[in-house]
Length: 474
Image 1 (cartoon, rainbow, N blue to C red):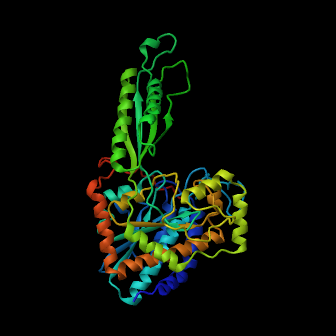
Image 2 (image 1 turned 30 degrees about the horizontal axis):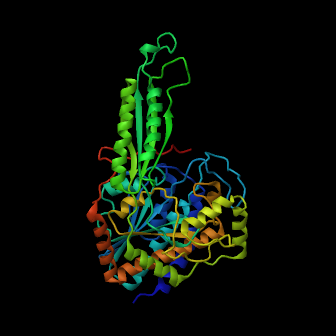
Image 3 (image 1 turned 90 degrees about the vertical axis):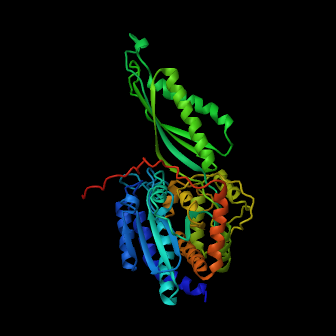
């Protein structure tokens, strides 16, 4: 018989260990495909909790799977633990105060994300053993969500095949079932090759790769007028050809991020951007080499799983914060603009309040005005019925990818919220294993969404993940 209280007690039992894991990961921030210390911490915790371990998933040395249970459906919890460059920050301090070191920091809260997902997996593992319920729980430790698309590579390799449902979450300002809003995204490199020459004495002999890169950027600016308004195209110069203005630059390299509301739209937009690059090369008598670095799909919703998760939010009630939690959140809010805070409320479609921490659950039917990013969870959602939660680890208005996120990553409020959301996820997984109809309805929902556009991995088969070497021991 289903008993949320039992599985919630299991979360509480494991919470101190997983809070400790979260804090350790916060203290060793590692970016895209360099998460060797972080994955080692997760492997050690999985072993300590009795999971069967599969390392080097999809040929990625910083990816891991832990599994427990026998027979029955497979329920997956997706975890992350990568950090970001340039967001180093002392914990628990409401002013910019970078720590000494490499400048990296958990400015998206992935130290909490992976730890809470593993916490939910531990509770479900115990429940399976205690009740003898057929079923398997898997924890997927996934690196490189920030720009590396590890889950997309893992999906292409079949790592999620056979999973009945996938459950995850993300640190946020609000408590809610996360709406399936994300943009499909390709990161594509354009390398122009020309011919160097003296820019004054022999300009006619030169073919400027920098001119080609600039013309490409101009062409893309005009393209913006003729794409769906939700699309996004942005870029950076990886190589502008050198610092000598008296040399016609023979090399230039751009990286574009091309985003669209869905996979078919992204594939079409990719081709339009490629044609602009080819036109720029033609105009400048240069050559262009085009390569995809990474890509992710947009998220697909799953109504049955979202309804089940919302019911667990409501059964559990919101997290309980105390005066000290609210005081620190208020100090963080004092570092934000009025626009930051107003935008956060518009994004979830609720009226502003005077509380600095969200102590309520956002309804699913609010009228939102979200600004949308991208995530490699999207690729999982095209293969497996997937649902996500948001939990209020952050003061309302905290912008993602900011020093303020890093500052809040080890606070008591974050620990409370990660434990709370682990209970929501664990109970939703329990629903999947006790309600035979739920998984069938979730699969039917996904199949209906795929009928119009079946899944095609947005990363070509010949593209490998940009793995980084294990750092040498000090």
